[in-house]
Image (tube, rainbow, N blue to C red):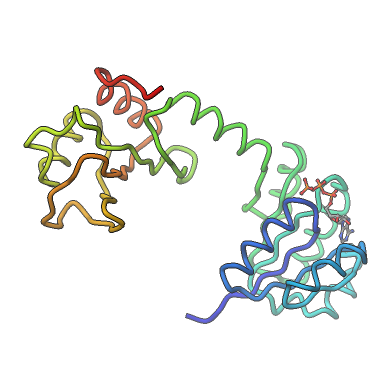
Length: 231
Ligand code: ATP
């Protein structure tokens, strides 16, 4: 698969975290910011770093922005600059655009410009924290998939170790009886197995499950009803 190229506009905390991770994942990253000091710092790590005001359409075109696979607009407080930059990127024909939005109005305007991929970090962080608090200490990790579904993990505790559950197929069936969640993977002894693998599931195994938020909550409530959370 060809390596994807990315551009990140705006080197606030969000933009910087994004470029660090993209570089770690071995992608080419073009970074742009109107502040030359930020660009000087970023030049040490990014593939290309350009000091430019991205509300200048001609400058963006000269940089070759249209040859980039995916552009992220991470300008924060200056909503006007974010919207204008997004409009220019659309007009230049950039196909994949993600915009970091500051509030719901910003999100709406960006959607009107034809961008359907937005990130609202404060909202996501609040939402994730609420999910974590409401699922309690039994969920060890989770990733939301879309608005309604989640991929989450729980530990197979000692009190759940009946002989029926040691076999992955039986374990999957036991789980299905509790809620409509699907056992997708079993992580134990530094290896990942599917429920089809012929293994013996051990105490402490990490079970990865997929289901809607509502079914996840039902599963946690029922599966752990007799289990005391660890202090
Ligand atoms: P974070 O929460 O991620 O720190 P923020 O909301 O504080 O972000 P800002 O500091 O407002 O974000 O903006 C991020 C960066 O965007 C800044 O480094 C700023 O220089 C840059 N920026 C703002 N306007 C433009 C523009 N027109 N062209 C290029 N870069 C811009």
